[in-house]
Length: 122
Image (cartoon, rainbow, N blue to C red):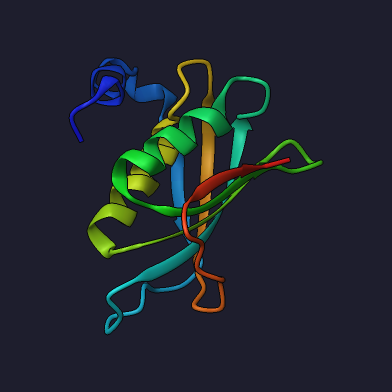
């Protein structure tokens, strides 16, 4: 992933990284993995959805990102394990410079509908 995101993430303060909480184990025998994630912290009104979409497009991750009424951001994502792991790490660090991620709660969910691209949902 050679992009402005690499430069930005390399400069992030380690204290601004949120924790990742996995609610279940990743499936072992599937080429495509599917997750839903709830990101909390200062993640609304800071370009989080926009930068999440850019990162997903760059990694080839498909899915959606949307703001929730409780101040969190919700993500559904599908990809191979390598790219999905990179995407989750990006969510943890906060793809937007103004974001401060406290935690990312990740659930593997094979029932998530596969999308043809990654989009922001209002």
